[in-house]
Image 1 (spheres, each protein chain N blue to C red):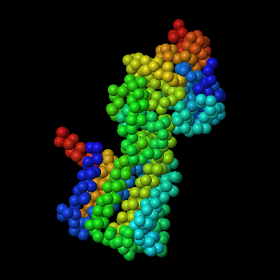
Image 2 (cartoon, rainbow over the protein chains, first blue to last red):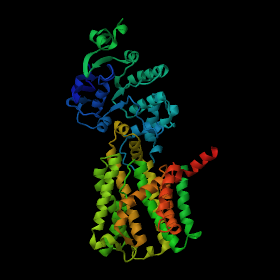
Image 3 (spheres, chains in turn green, orange):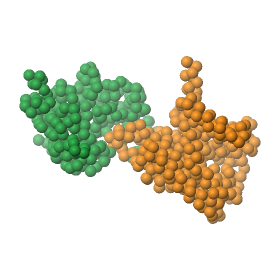
Length: 251
Length: 312
């Protein structure tokens, strides 16, 4: 197997008496989609927050691209190529879709302590931003204020912002959350397109999507990984079925 | 750009004012006072509207600029090419020193900590007995420009204030549209998103705060020269509140709102004091409240509100 891009080593985190992350060890290798599934409250979003640096760990280490990033800030990790999308859409509502993506491009395109030249006319920023919008099928809505986009479009924009940072790894926190069947179809198509270009750690509730997209699946229950394997292995795993998939789906 | 025309229009009206019936001495004094507070209000609007940093200590930046003039005057330094940079640096320096701590907080805490720093500056000014303490300090004359008494002429001073206001507006306008300003504006709307794409907002906010402080120092320099007198009242939290009110009265939609707000505030204050007499604040207060209630976009948003009314 290739050198892992993301390597989590025995992550632990407790909120008071509640162990939300309990010795999680997993990795993501370049070019794969590694999905994390688990029931509500399993600590999936918490895990994403620990990887991105939004939450600090009690113990354990996060290695990214061969380097220990455990003590780096969220912004510093993002600059190294760790991009995330949020389960609850997190965009700049007052900016146009293009400017949302351009802000992300700006973060990796030289100093932003530039005070006089108008940012909105910089081709250096706008061109990659538009490409990111194109990659998620949102280019035709570039000029629309992000706050005025539909729910599905906001989810696409969320992806476009992550892509615009030119990441090595995408951490996608329920990219399909709240989407109807049609939107879900479209988003799955977009994610499949991204797969060839980025390694992805995907947290998702939608089993159809996970089984369709993932190379490997890890199952998180009460902060603990109970299984990791390819799609077929996870489908067959007795512990997973008992904990999560339920009897009817196993039938 | 289309959005710049209101500001350019206001500046043009101010340029024409002395020649269309506002050229008499008292009116020029009032206009320059309005423009000086316009500078202060625009600089405050940069951080309130641009960065979401609601400061209740902005008068301290003016105070540092004004007291720089006083302290240099007492030391016999009255040359503008020395005094002006020192005044701007004093405002920016105070913003830097206090901002390092204040910017770590947000929301109500930021309001309270800027208020606290402002009051520290106020009590410091009141305790400077060498500079008049509570009673203030009367300048011997206005700052000299390369040895000439250029600023003593009211019309000259009018256009110096107008130039400074135009420059302040232009600087803030460009800064907000720049890469730097984009990060600032984005962090106001969604701090988490800005961090998640790779920016640490702290440095941007601090830099914005320092720019506003420097421009506040510029306003303080002009204010000291306008009145030829400086007192601790310039630094009081009430003055900071007035500045904040000018910004809100003008509307946060654009920087020109702050200019309108400052002019409206200064002229209303003057007019009511004459028309109503001793208890003019009894009228002024309710007027301010009504304006906040009914002018949602502030004075800058008035044309839009009226258009909305006509459409029903």
